[in-house]
Length: 264
Image 1 (cartoon, one colour):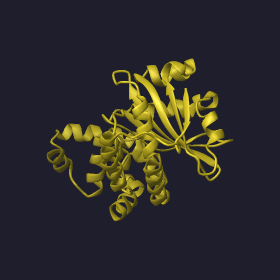
Image 2: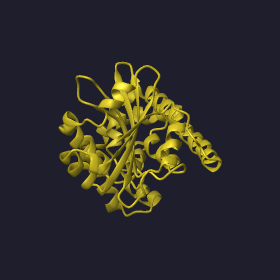
Image 3: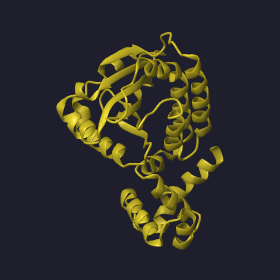
């Protein structure tokens, strides 16, 4: 485990600095949009390869709360891992303990963990199961709790280098401020946002078009998949959202999409 202050001076090479500016400008441009988690991850990958990312809040005397998560390839791994973590693993997770002690006031802490350093249950149920090799987390205090922005790499990806860690450290203020601004804009729509985070990109695309009144045939043509595939995405989305009919989808998400279009 490596833990450093993200506010320390960082050595950013010229070519990295140019990419960092473009990447962070892209992240800022995603603020407020309902697909922020996925779109911002694409922009972050312009800076350095990251397979997953997640943002959640840690509390001193309550279970953690997920704010957003996404995977670069659109897999269900992040949500499966979060459910396992939220169910019980967080109770024995010491990976944020020192960071939480250091992240007070305006100090932002960067913590780096390799999968082999994790407790066995944590490693097996999350890292080994989903082929994750390491995590790089930005941690800061957030009104009595702690906000953690986490970046994950897969086994087939290279380890985070010192340059990678310095690059994330240099971008830390912009990443955290972008995440906080997005969460503030969508605080009134938090339940819907959490529901959307459980959906894959294709499931979200189908739901969005259903909210606009599109037929299955129209969605099929637009997404270039078969009507049967559209129904499969719909059924999977409905199961994750805990609903059964289109009118329930309107009640749950229509206001969220309208607000996202206004601020996105």
